[in-house]
Structures are given as C-alpha cells and as structure tokens.
Length: 331
Image (cartoon, rainbow, N blue to C red):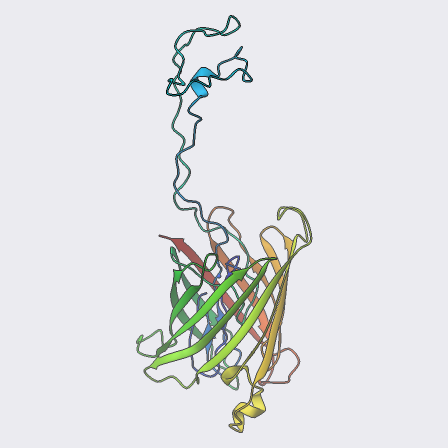
C-alpha cells in the first residue's frame, strides 16, 4: 500500500500481508495505498520542508537615537560614552522622544505544509525528523489473486534532523484492523543534501508481530527535486525523481515466487501540475503504477492519493484500485 509523502514525504510498498508505513517530501506528504504485492499495505508520508524557530526580532542598540533627521555618518567615537542620546548633539538632530516598539516573535513550530505526495508504493529519500509525526489509512479494491478488499492503518514519527545531520523515520503498521494483532515496524535513515538532493537507506518490516507473511526488505534510494518554476504556486512548478535498489518486495514477482535472493530496481517521478496536485508514475520493482496526489486544504496537512497498480500485467492478476489518506502533525 502506499503512503502520503511530505515535501515529502511520504511511500513504502509491502509484499503479501506486510506493513503500512506513513513516511512524507517531506518531503517530500504521501497517502497510503494497498500494497501491490499480495495483501500488503504501505502508508506514505511527507517530509516537512521548513521549520521556524522561536526568536525575538532584533532591534539595533542605536535605534532610538536614529530618529528622522539624524545624520548617520556622524558617529560618537568616544570610548565608554553611552550611545543612547537624550539631548541633540548636532543642530540638525531632533530631541529624543520615547517610542513604543512591539515585540515580534516568530512561530516556534511551523504547521506541516500541505503538499501532495510524490510516490505511491515505493520509498522516496524524504522522511520525518524530530517534531513531525503522521497517521494514515490505506485501502485497496482487492488484494492480488483474490476478490477481497483490504485495508491497513499506520503511524509514524521522526527523530534527528535530516537537514543538519541525519533523520530517522520510524513507522508502525497494522495489517489486521479487526484485531490489531498483525503488523510490523520499519525504519529509514535519511539526509537532505545541497542542490535539492536527498538520500536514504531503510528496512521495511524490520520487526514483525502476529501473522504477517511479508518479508524483510532492505533498500537504498536517492531523490532529486527539479525547480521548473520560481514559485510553487505556478503550474508545473516542481519535478521529483526517485531511484533506488532493494531486496525483498522490490524483487521481481518471479524471483519472489521462486525464492531467488536477488536485487530489484524501483523508481518514481512526480510532477507538481498545480500547487495542491501531483501526477505520479512509478515502477515498484514488479509493475507499473499511476496515480494522482491531492492536498485539498491549504492549511490542513491532509493528503489523498488514489491510483491504479499492476497496469502492465508484469505482476499480479490484473489492475487494482488503491487509495491512501495521510495526515501530518507537528509537536
């Protein structure tokens, strides 16, 4: 299933009955969707891009003496003399008059930006850092080789700082909504680099509990953002391209079926066609998927990503509708 990635977020796809992961662009936000392989799900997340720290607006120590009419080129160079003048020193100066100056504070924590996802079933190199968390739900019209619809839930949180050092994105998924007894824990180490690059390594289903038949999948991925316009508010403003390699669920379906220990290649491209909408195409390592990610509310970090998986018939038994919904929170 796939997830809502934040600036990007959000993104991992599980094989068989494995996890849900809500990761973010970050992010790159990515909604979650039913896993393309068997009955698994993944919840994607979005990595918030900017955080603001609480600081008071700085005001020059000489501000009160620099009232209109003051010649700034005439400075007091006397050692030890108070720079706050209460009486005019030059004829052209005006007498000092107290002024009320408002204290302006920036927001300590910026609310997660509302941005569409950039992947569906595959991971991106964006992830959550400390101060960000996510929840998500994933649905699919039917699991592979069945006629039964399925769903999953996931929660995730971030540690560290991907901009200054390294971020750690941890996700917990539950694939049995009725009992909450079956699920997995996954993690991703990610780092944002200069020139709009990001890199990540991770393991899906690192720990499993209950009855899950999805195997552990290690991977590495790199993501590059291309600035097509000078503002995200303009149409076709951003292009996100991700490429990676991994084992486990990223292998071809034939290698999984024949238990061949190989490595698969996956990737995705997401075009921001409008500020709240991205069009996504991706190769999961097994088959092709197409989707649209929408952030319907400007100030609410909710991301909805519907899509279609197994389009080419290279894996599975026909196309399937998948849907991911994710929500990011700041703390």
